[in-house]
Structures are given as structure tokens and as C-alpha cells.
Length: 158
Image (cartoon, rainbow, N blue to C red):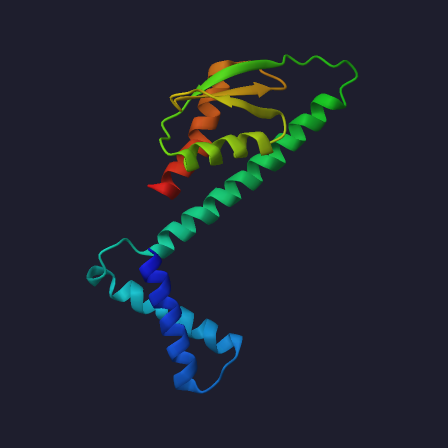
């Protein structure tokens, strides 16, 4: 992937030199031409096309934004109820993620989403302990995190 990015930037710079215009728009058009060239010549490049991973990163960012907005709405509903009837709880989230980077990203996404906070990671990196402000069903919370954040992180990193 780093080779493809470097090659794409090199194509964009060469495009600027060939067109004798050293503006951002010329660089950007050369970058787009480089993306098309890399896409056409994809079978000659040993690694997977890097724009697929870029698209998956954007999908992860959109997913986080959606979850952030939905959890904010849920927290506001809980806070503005006349009678505060929350059920806080701590649960262990089993994770299939292996690298420290993936686990750290998942723990941060959990903590940045209102209503949940990652407390600790087990010594063998197989569990993340999460505190939830309102925990009605532990299995539903685990499934929700695994189906959204963990799945998206695995798509980006693998």
C-alpha cells in the first residue's frame, strides 16, 4: 500500500511537470489520473488496490459519526426524563482483534461514544471491560459493538 501511494504521488508530480502548471488543481488531476492508472494496472502490482482501504476507512468514520449521533440522542433522552431510571453496568466484551493498534482503536471508539467507557483490557488482549451508563441487555450490547465497530475495524486492518 505505501508503494502505491508513493507511485500515485509520483504520477501526480510528473503530470504537473508535463503540463507545466504547478498548481493544486494540476496536482489533483494528476493524482486522479494516477488512481485510474493504478486501477487499470492493478494485476501487475502485488498488493491490493489501496483506494479500497481508503474507502473502508471512510466507512468506519461514517459509522462512528452515526453511532455518535445516535448515542447522543439516547443519552439526552435518559438525562431529560423526569425520573432517572438508568441501570449502569460493567460487562466483558470478548474481541477477535489481535494487534495492540486494533484493540486500542476499538477501546477508543467505545470510550468516545457517549454512554460507554472502556475501563481495561485483559492481559491476554481477549477481553475489553466496558462500563455502560444504561445496560438493559448485556448480550445485545456485546453484539452491537461486535457487529459495528469490531467488524469495521477488521475490514480496515485486514
